[in-house]
Structure formats: C-alpha cells, structure tokens
Length: 367
Image (cartoon, rainbow, N blue to C red; front, side):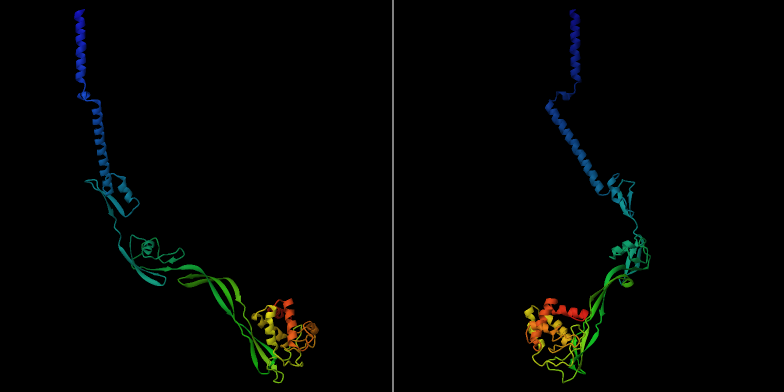
C-alpha cells in the first residue's frame, strides 16, 4: 500500500542518517592527511623511548642505577667492596672495606736487609711482589707466604738452586835428565822447556744463599798433557867436544843403534845447519826442525862417524846397514850432507815427516 511504502522508505532514510552521525569526525579527514598524522605520532613515541633509555644508561654509568646488573657486576668477586643501596632514592654507592692495620717488618734476601710495610689484610706473597722481591719455587722463606706478616717480624728468603761449574787443575811437568858426551862433564843444558798441562772437571753445585751445600762431579777431561822438561847432563871431556856441539855416541838404545864413544868426532861443517837448509827441499817447514834435531841427536849426536858396535848402524841417521846411504853418494861414510840427504829421504818415505819419525821413536825406541 502506498502509505506503507512511504513509511518503510522513511525508516530507511532515518537509519542512514543515524549511521553517518555515529561516524568519527576524523572520517571526514582525507586519507593522506591521516597517514601523515599517524607517522608523526609514532615518531614522537620513538623519540621519547630513546631519550628514556639514554637517561637510564647514563645513570648506570655513574654507578647509581637502581635495579641494574651493571652496578653489581662492577663489584662481583671483590671482597673489599660492598654495594649499599640507599633506602631513600635507590642510589647504589660502592664503599671500600677497611684496608687493615699497617704492618712493618724486615726481609733479608740476597745478602741485604730491607724494611717493608704491608697490611694485616694482605698476604706476605703480595707484599713481597709489591716490593719487587721475586721468590722462586725452590727458595725457602721463613714465614708462610699465604698469610699476613706479623708486626716486627724478621723474615729470611733463602735462595736455593743448582748450577754447572768447571774447575781447572794444573798438571805439573816432570824434569828428565839425559846424559850426553856432547857436553863436558859437570855442565848441563836445557834441551826442552817444561810445559804444564791441565785437567778440567765439570761439577753440578747445589747452593743456598751463595754457599754450596752439595757438589756432584759430572765429568773429568785432560785438556792438555804436560810436556817434560829435558835437561842434558854432560859426560864428555874438553878434548872430545867440539865447537859445533857434535860429539861421539849418546849411548842411544835405539834398535838402529847409537855410536860408540870411541868413534872419531866430526870437525867439519855443522851438520845441523846442513840439515836445516835441506828441509824445504822435502816440503817441510821450520816446525819440523825440532823433531829432526831430537831424533838424530838421540841416534848419533849428529856425528857422521857414529857407529853402533852391536848392530852396525852407521852415520847421522844410523842407517842399517850403513851402505844403504851409497844411493845418495859414494862419500856416504864421511860426508854429512850425503848422510842427511839419504836420511831425509828415508824419513819422508816411511813416516812422512821428521815429527812422524820422532813420534814413532818416542813410542817404541827406534825409527
């Protein structure tokens, strides 16, 4: 019916008006503007939150942040600090414990006595470290290192350790006399100067405060052998000695034989000078001369006429038989140069050098 339709339309129209009246006023604000306003409000909230967090952080850094773990972490494990919380404002203020009473004592170490001041709350080990006194594990301390020293205490640090030492012992030389007719009776001549030897001993020493308490011998080595002093003792007469220093037999016990004192002496050129001038021809230096001089002095006293009556060895080098020297010259019986030439060739071929021949002679008595 017309009247009913009009009423229904009127009701729907009224309902739509009531719905628009309930919509917030912001609904009439354009959408872009609403987004801008929302973003601004969010920025304000974020800035406020950051400011609050920064203020709390600064408060904790000053040690007054109540309820924070940073303040407690600063004192954890420290027995000398107590964290007290104020009942009024919650501000935590660290307070140092009482340091303890001062303690004065003396320490004797490394030969010196020093006075130190510590505390009843500090152990002896820390006090010594603070004073720059280092105590090794092997050292002995007269007071407990883990306790506080007593007032007026006298503490000694005894250094204990081991070290390797060496001792050098001098080995004296002996004096050996050799009789020779080359010198007049009643006269002597030093042929070889004596030289002392040495023996080295290695020792492990245990010491305490600089004093050795134990010694253990580890090894002993002879560093150098002593050299005997050789003194020639004259047995000849003025008539049998010559200005050249040559003479008859020295009485050598060499198997190549010495010569008899009844043999004639040589009065020509000095055989020693001839031998010295010939050394270089065999490639030897002056260092070989002393060995050659000793060798042929023992064999023949440098007498070209020396002859061993038992073996028949002849001449300065005591060739056996003497006729071997004919390979060096037909005048081998009288010419010292011929004998020396043959003798040096023999030494070179068999021993390599005069010192090699002398060492063999020293060892077995002949060469």
